Image (cartoon, rainbow, N blue to C red; front, side, top):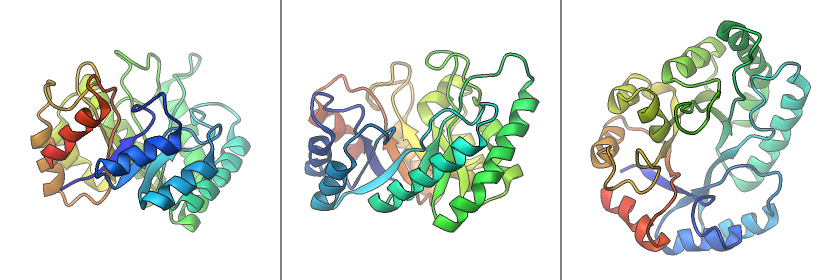
Length: 252
């Protein structure tokens, strides 16, 4: 049975974060996640997760989307150090790394070499902390036009070259279905490199039931891999949040 995490950015958007966390707990989930930490009330989140007993599954490294930018070494090192401190405070095991867009005046390989160099620079901080940084490919057809990292094979190539157990892949099923499909095959192929998963319906990024993907089969495939990480529910609900979030629990 996959461990499910609720992305509180997408649900109860009229409520403060700490109230969203309490709603997640009331529905029977064991974990939540969020995006950036730089502008939110960390004290309130910390109190809510302690009060509810929920785990923090993941959040984004700050600064976001800088892994393709030139001359970002110092900013990335300081940003990772600050993000690690927040993660340790929240007892969160996983940080999410985002990428910027393609760089117009250089080839993919030129950018890739810089990304690898940045990640090698960050590797000691991650390994010393015991945290995992996950690299997230996104689709450029619908949501993130121009985004640099798109395919699972590209992410795996970077992970293999950096060669650290602290740097893995976030497989976002929604984005990868749009980009390349082959969801279960890619889960199996890259399972040893995957440390976090996101789930949403395709094509509209809504509930898991009733979309073009069979999430019951996807969850069964994840179970068969003995995957130990979280599956984050990162979708925009069309139903009442309580009704919407009851659906994934019925699949596991």
